[in-house]
Image 1: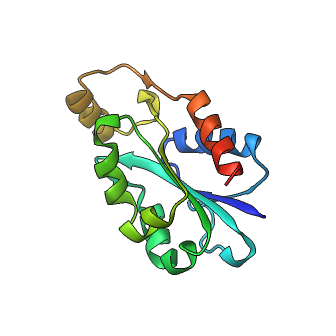
Image 2: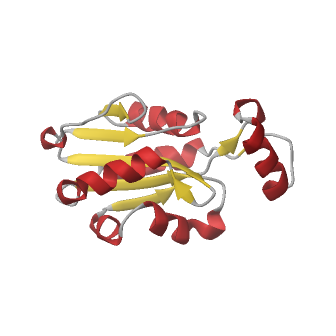
Amino acid sequence: MKTLIIYASKHGTCEKIVKTISKKIKCDVKNLNIVDSIDLSQYNKIIIGGPIYAGSIHKKIKQFVNENSKELVKKKLGLFICGLNDREFKEEFENAYSKELRESATLIETLTGEIIFTKLNFFEKIIVKMVMKTKDDILKLNTKRVEKFALKFEKV
């Protein structure tokens, strides 16, 4: 079975997650910030993931899954989001992926995240300071959790 990881990353955390997964399982990787189209027909297993900002997944992930959902539901599918708000995991997942995709997925996970202030633009810094009540980096990337997700998906 051939595996593909599809992702988009804004500040690099999701990319770190994908690199960790790809070190654990044999797969191809496609970054939607770089590629415009992907031939899904050559893959049996697909992992899709992206960052959550203000409750919404990266717009390129949203667009990709909306345009390709009919083909995606036919695959062994793993879905993840990366973010910092475990309390709203269910709601964020419902906003990120359609009910049809969530129900067809064999593995769903939230894979923590981080905020590195030097990577944020001016407005993002203001929002993070107001919402998170900090101006310090938040480093909650849990590599063990990411590796566990990869190994679970490999067994699917």
